[in-house]
Length: 66
Image 1 (spheres, rainbow, N blue to C red):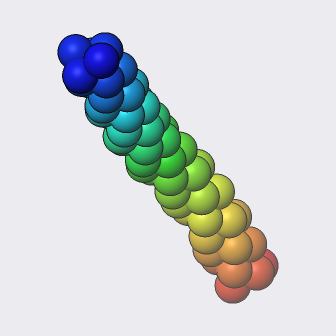
Image 2: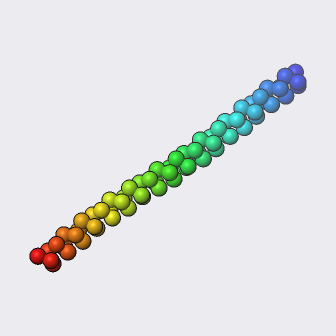
Image 3: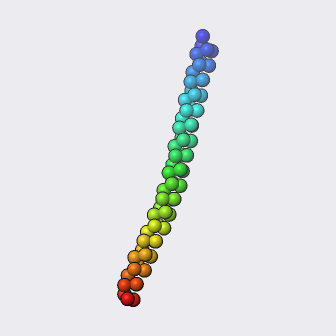
């Protein structure tokens, strides 16, 4: 009947909306996680670069001092 069809269509629409909302939440979570990971990686890379630069500078200074 029309009522059954309407109820079924409503359920399908609800499911689609829930799926779409879930996907959007997943994407947002993924993006947020990616940003955090990127920041951590950047910080780690910066620290490593700083250490390497300090070591290199120390070596050069040591050579010049000798």
